[in-house]
Amino acid sequence: MSRFGSGTSQQNLLTAFTSTSVKPVFLIEIHWGGTSYDRLTTAGSTLTYDGNNYIDAGDMISISNADENSDLGASGISIALTASNATTLSRARTSNFQGKETKVYLGALDSSNNLIDAIPYFIGYNDTVTIDQAVNRSVITLKVENKLIRLGKKNIRRYTEEDQKRFSNYGYTPFEFVTYIADKPIKW
Image 1 (tube, rainbow, N blue to C red):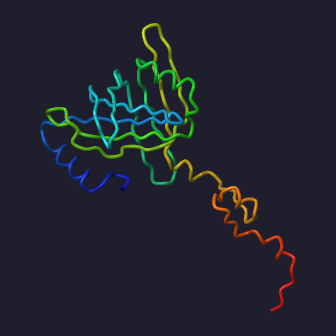
Image 2 (cartoon, rainbow, N blue to C red; image 1 turned 90 degrees about the horizontal axis):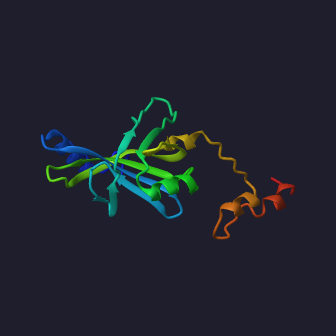
Image 3 (cartoon, helix red, strand yellow; image 1 turned 120 degrees about the vertical axis):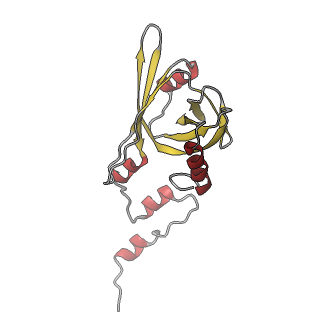
C-alpha cells in the first residue's frame, strides 16, 4: 500500500468527500508495547477497519496537523484525549511506549455512520506522554514523531565478524575469515 492508501481507497474517499452526506473520522492505533494496543475513533461508536475494532475515543480533544516540509526534517503530531478509559491511562503511565508505532487514519462515514474507507494520515513513533490531572478529568497528550526521524540516526555498523553475528539469525557470517586474511600477503 502506498503512503496514501491504495488507488481504490483514494477513489472511494474522493467520491465520498465530494458527496453531501459524509462525515470525516479519525482512526487511531497506538502501540503501547508488547501486545498492548489502543484503537480509538472519533466516530462516536465502534468501527471495524482492516480487521480491527476501533472503539469510541470519548472526548477526543485534538489531533494536531501533520505538517510536511520540503527537506527531510521530521515533524510530529500531538494526540490529546481524555483519560476516561482506565486502561489507556494505566498504559500511558506504565508501559514502555517510546519508539513504538502509532498510526492515524483519515476516513469517511456515510449517512448511516458506516465506514466507507480510510487512508493513512500520519504514521510515526511514540515519543513522550504527558498526563494533566484535574479534579474532574485527566488529559493524556501523546507526542508522535514522524518516521523520517530515523533517517537522522547514524547506523554504526562494522565489517567484522562480531558485528555480523549480532544481526545474523542463521549463522551466516561472511566476514568470518576477514581477520585471517587481513595480514596475508597477496601476490598478483
